[in-house]
Length: 443
Image (cartoon, rainbow, N blue to C red; front, side):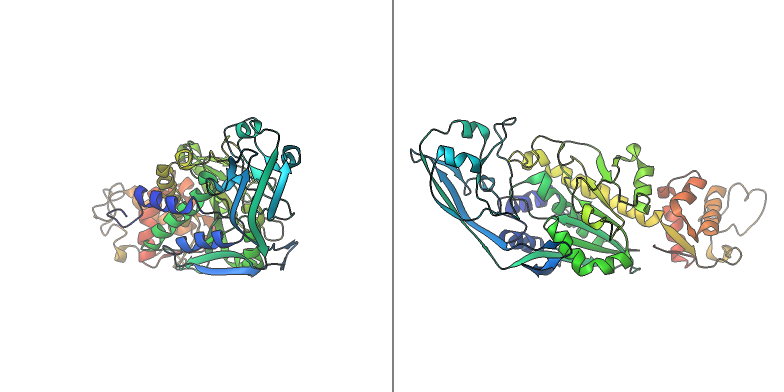
């Protein structure tokens, strides 16, 4: 922990080291163990949907657990062993014990010829198969003979587990922060999102004012978000005003990469587009063809105002879904940087939305609130003698903010009208809120 009480690099590094070796999947004890570790730092509410439940067009799978999987060569050498690396087994493999010739074994082996030193991450959640994953250079060294296969795994009636936590704000309208826990031993594509989510929970819990309520969700990718929507979708359709899926927030890229919501015109979409490259963001349009859980949140029936925040984007680096996606690639400092920058974005998001003038009939009497020059003269028309208002510019901003805060104009648009930034308006917004003249009207 840092002196200020927020999490520092050493904290994230230690937590990463606990989480990385766990054999996770979309169900099972590894997923629950990982959720429980995050539950040590966030007051998570654990939940789940039983195996075999019809969830929209999906049926939840049986739960899966793995004890150990080994592949032993003709000379007794252990070629693949999940005790050495848990990517060595096909994730969700059925149990298998037996002896196979190399020719019989080959259809059950997975490697990447283009990257022969990396172990691939391969899954088969919804079709019963067994197999091993290994580097292509190891695969090419395999000799003819009899191989012993031992996959001590099982599938059984259980549940799809997930968890959430809510930080209440002044409004019941919500902002969703969602990430996934289901990939074994991957860093950027697995642990970066949940670690950033944890950091954001810590930061937002310390805010003196939360204008919005924030919902934090950890779940297995795809089937987890479907299950969550199955339980909470109606609530989210009524209450959600924004959201972010957090994924791939480590790696070498410097800018944060934002994928818009399906609507492409939410307050967050417009804000990040306005900040742009100068604000440290690159922007991608929404697509349902690739991505993470925003595909479910933004599916046609829900169309929630949820975007995605990444950095080194899935599929755009060679280590993606391989053993090369490790702590060194991810970078702990990148996690701290992402927490800092997304926290700042969330602050701006609250300020950039639609506000309501609580005294809209005529101009509010600013003088009795020390917001207007008490002496009106040619001098005060250009520079106020008051300590609160140090220039006519500040007064003009107050008058403009109040006039256009009619429940229709976004504060970002008002800032554009004033040729200033949201950051410039922040002290004015906060002062007008304190004076009960202004209130966020989230929608």
